[in-house]
Length: 258
Image 1: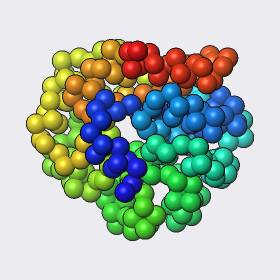
Image 2: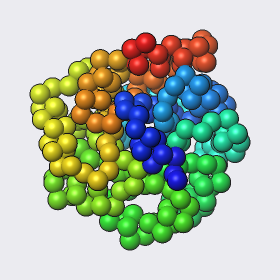
Image 3: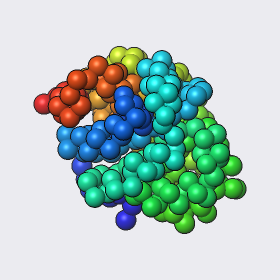
Image 4: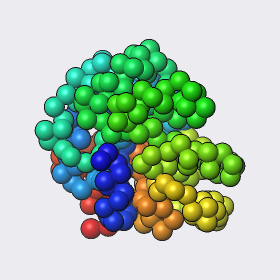
């Protein structure tokens, strides 16, 4: 069973998925951050592929991506860093990034390297559902990879149902139609959106992302989904960290409210 499915069928609620940019803050930080997150109690990890034009990301993740590229990070190097990661961690690992670097790397090669590295899923926000189904579905399936789709408050019900039918693992529910970043507690408009999705009784579970930054916003998201995704707040913490392992432990503990 894919580790993502195993996580969501385990019965555990309040799933915490954490995003960080590979190659940041240091070029060779990737494996240490993954191991520290798993050890600190994160349920799932999204490893960001640095890109020069991350359109959906706010300034914190944009800056981390820029720094990672200047550090010499690349997709090829990332797979090298992940080569032995499954000897250390067993929680679900996903790669998240934009389509351009993946196409340059070669989709077939990308899927094969993901499988060889023990990657469970991929999130490519600018890969349209129809293109995925027509051109890449078989490559993902043959590599045992889940392609995770995003929905937003502007995604209509017909398209949400199409995404649900094509999905495996979970659906990434973007909390607002904006870039990533810390935004505080949810508005009534956002809550109405969460309730609308819940009322649809989708086949796949959802995680809420964008704007989750602390215990309060994490707990609020968990009331409307299986859990939440934290990115910018974690990346910001990494930029200030003097002791990655200990600071990651404190960060996860704070999000959990412990």
